[in-house]
Length: 514
Image (cartoon, rainbow, N blue to C red):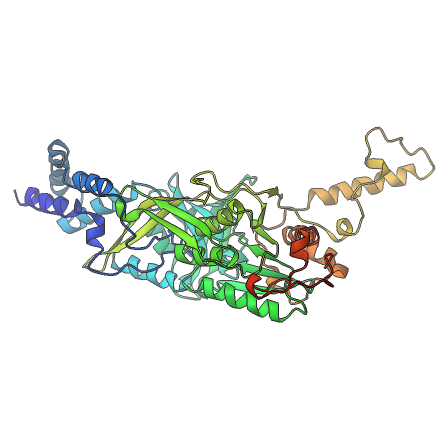
């Protein structure tokens, strides 16, 4: 009877509306799908209510009676475990395990966080944490890497999006709950950790030995490309990212003589983060209109985020770089700019995380991280499990010095049906081709999401081959950006790039070719 009563009280409490649970303590404004080790975006703790009928429906569902047959089975199992399990287990542990299992089986991003796990999540939100710097999610019982974060142990070790972590310090990940796996990867700076990963295209597991670090991730990096074009690298969306991007744009504009002619916005391997920061970044480039719409079952989960009037670049072209590690809040930005036709999206299909998580603190210091809504781009697209399809597909390749200066990249010998060389030096030519083929076979694809901001050298037209070697995706984005600037409508050619439209004056002497 004691156990049955306890179970009844517990389940009755858990059926209370989650938004009621969150009212006593304000939820944090961010729960990024972040670094090291934490998966999730967050929506505001509360949002404008929907219709009365939707609210009534949610209230009616919360009042539904609990299934008595299932409760009896649960109680019977609990009693059996207490009586027959090989070791003694207290009621609190069993009930805590039940809560973990109930939430984790909902979807890959919902989780019950004990006090320690919730504190770790708050640390990650601030942008400073100890760990490896890799965004992961549970898939088929293992940890799938969504993306590594720039300048972290994970990135330096060569961990790539799509890698499956199957062991942590020799212990199998299979069977671990997500919070336990995350906790295993976290630790004091300087401590060692060994990971075993599986990677597509590799026949054998890869053993990696890493050293944890105190990671303070710089959300935004910037520099000039070719004197007149800006480069903005957003590594994740933290609480200050919107302000950081705005500041970076101003600094880049000050470094140019006539203002910015365009910007490359690099969102490769960006795992997401704070929803409102994604809205803030989109707002900088959109002149009004919808940024993202959130829809959930509860009325509190319904919300439409709008951009304010004014474009920080006054219509100057934007190229957004994405790849399979671009997820969640980063996909919101890419989708908003793509739907508005404000930017050209270049790269590979994105990760496809189109759900929103709300963190609801509980009175005992724990918290519930619950998927409460899906988000939709301005055109009404849901990218859940599909991702953003780029306007310009771009494979991840590596360009060598020879390839980058070889003109078209092919010669007469490469043409179909080309005549064979029958001269005296034909054998030498064939031998040279064989050697070149062997070298090509050893060439590996470029690491996705390379960080060109680590190179202090400005990229001009004269050193374009060097940029192509370091980061082929950025090289192609810059080429496209120059073309977009040159082909601007005539009225745009008479505006000073990088200045708000309201502050511009027609300049009859403007050079439309930049």
